[in-house]
Image 1: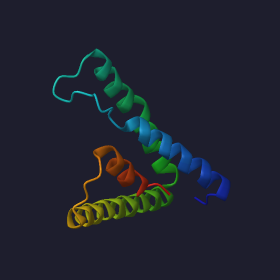
Image 2 (image 1 turned 45 degrees about the horizontal axis):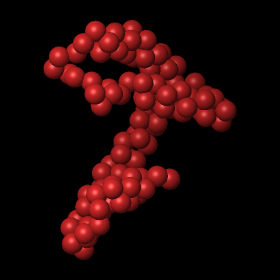
Image 3 (image 1 turned 180 degrees about the vertical axis):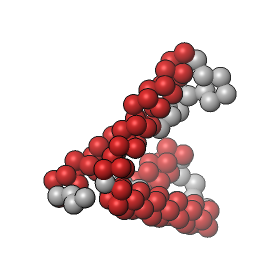
Length: 110
């Protein structure tokens, strides 16, 4: 199926929002989920997974392109982070941890 530029924009934003909601929160306990965490799992499986499946069925090629682009971007971030860590180690920086973590985060911002 053909997809217009406007539809691509909406599709991208929708996938981004769903992806954010599919991620487990930092405080999530995989080993011993409480009631709220169990509800989160149910929500993920009953709502978000089905929505992603429907979008993939409607536009399989576009979804594959989007996933491929995300994979490439993730690999570049990992490589960039590895390179930054090597550079920092080589320079033997003595800056505080808060300034180095904000530097590292800024490396990934567009």
